[in-house]
Image 1 (cartoon, rainbow, N blue to C red):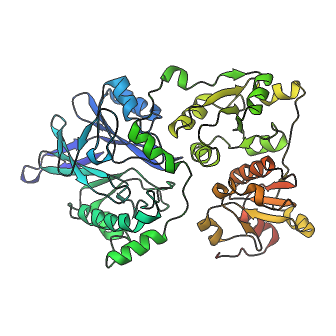
Image 2 (image 1 turned 135 degrees about the vertical axis):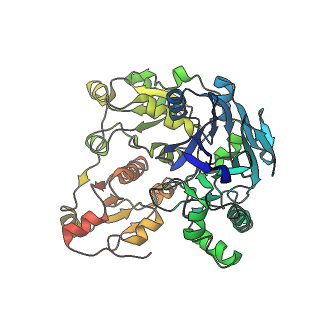
Image 3 (image 1 turned 120 degrees about the vertical axis):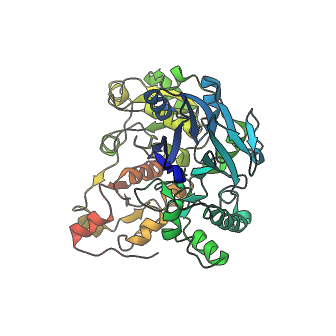
Length: 471
């Protein structure tokens, strides 16, 4: 919620802006109450459950669906809102989207019926990026900054390829400094936040103000453009493979879904699952790590159902692959389906009917991956297993087990068959990514694999030995 004091008359106008946070992707969409029973939604994903719930609570009909840029980390929900709610889609004219929308360029405005939305061309994260300034009369209330100015940083500029990264980083410098000319009390409502692979520092804050960013954002404190570029590019890590696909899908426009059937998974008997596996489908096991460890369908890929499920599905499974889900009865099939569809995985063949109990009862083969505790690891190390750490580069550098091999989980999907077939203990921070890595290694024919139940700090505590920092 944002408040603005209209000067000498001391009239305070309150505008309701509700952030809708996707913890898994690290992003925020926003629902704006336009004051007349209508709502405006900014940067909604194809998974509109949170938008629908918030609009219903507030008694709003969604009249506008706004995108700040061609998203790489999720499919836009704007077309679904247009189809279901009659919402008017607003986006950058420079994005050349291939579906009906109102295309805006720098300085263009949309009258929202009292409030106004002004487009600000802010390239950098993408080359067609717009921020949107929300005005009440002539008073700027806040800016939907998308992937330009974010809390404590700016979004990455390398999504269009290495040959354009420096150019876009310099454009990002100009965009941030343009936004910094707004008044200090103007709210900043970014799309990308902590946990986003579009580059955001850790922290709990999802929104900010221009004044707070001028005072505390290291990029705005950079003495010149070159220093800004060096700082921004130096902070970038890897990003999921699917980022290279979704921007173009968003340009064309993702397919409109039948919401009633989209949140379900078709039950598949064991013979049907076998036939699908033989024809190239991937079995995605979404059960918790201990359950997968105890027994799973041979060749299944472990991606536990948690907020980050969509990211790892998009990173580890090739696009267009039919998916068969294995879950526990207490896991929501709708959550699996919606997370898959928001990153472009519509080939959901169904789920194993009856789960692993049905698989066992059919006498089908079962595989397992041992779990190793931190207390057991020192004993196992006498047999000299390889320690494989699959965390992100920044995590590995912050502290790892001495002698550990490092391959990020996202990269392992392309390298599993090239690693030596020797006793290996896989570790990450808690175990979820490590089990995903172990399942990739098993799919590549590696049989001497176990997983650490815990992370490097657990090993350090159990052995009273320090972790190693650096590369």
